[in-house]
Length: 554
Image (cartoon, rainbow, N blue to C red; front, top):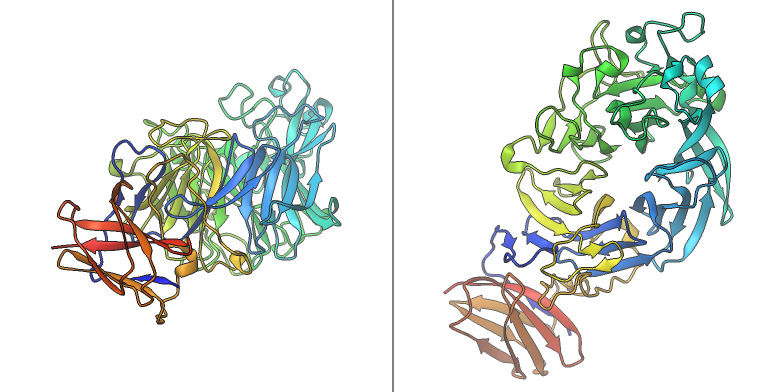
């Protein structure tokens, strides 16, 4: 037996929860993407997927903290970085060391740990269309080499080393091995203007394709600036361009480099599709980092989660969560869409004497005071199938979806204290999330998976229940129950005359009434019911329960 709800009226209003609701789904409208949201809390050992009402779709219990990114993939598997106990002197909260593929049943199908005296993976890794992985890693660069590369002696940490950025492409082998098939190192693409006796001496502003090794100042407020001169915190791959996008937090920039090179070419300034070897093809966000403009031209402030939009009318543009950490004046975050000036040959337009364009991003959310939100660290945004944008303000654990009019159409506050669920009404903390992603119900990663909804993560006596995924068919047969409202009366057509129990909830999730019937036709009215959107949970004699929304208008 299936249950179908027929709405005689449609509405486009937010389901605004009562003030005592502090976690889980806070806002839900019919403009929200009908789908499932995935997140892996920063301080927890599990990853979660929930529906629009916060009901648990799946949970991956792991024995390690994330380190930091996690993805739900088209394969139906979770790709997750994880923390290990570092062998070398890597002391960042962004440490990883491990990377794993985990199936829907929480079984690890492949894993690898890059953790040596001199190397450690960190932050992020992505799987490429060819099945390989691009991983962000650190390698120790010791004082003698730093000096030979032009780092000022007084700008080297007393410990005598730095964490140099290294990107590796690895081919997974078996269940726990890799083959490194390509690599790129920042130390091959440096410039400095303090020691003319060194080979990489030059005018920094004349070479935006190179990184100034004397950034940042060792005493700056940047993340671990004494060791971590760049702090890559996101990586993405564009198959059509064969290019790599990187978020470089400590210089407040996004970079693009060529992946079409050999490893030897990636260590040089020639070769590849663009002829520039492993040099920086494009950089944007803070031209003062290459002395191309004053600090007043800085546009990014501690950004995270940068990636190419890969479908729809915005395809090829770059989506950025601009944290706003250190923004002039009041700190606040924005989500922005950048249109890089791509040329036909794969390079990026730059006029002599001026910074890389554009002057500003094409689209922005959060700069209006009515839209203000803030996450100093973590965070990302995602362009959704319906054209909405999902925003993960990672530090406070707030995930929300905005429509084309920049209106919030869904909002979810992660209901966790680390690994421990909150109770509705709690004021949560320690619920941060590095990333969050939302998927429509027809996402190919769900193919072959039986979605069974659980309860909400939070303890909640009166949760809102969204549409049961097993009752999505619009077909009507002789055994379906049809629910509709006419002139303030809710009518139930029950062709089989089986006994059913019904519970009625308001939009705040409070139980208003319960009743049962076993007639083929049943009319229900209650003068004490509020007008507007109600939720009827129907429990069949078999024990199957589904919920439907009805608009009650006299």
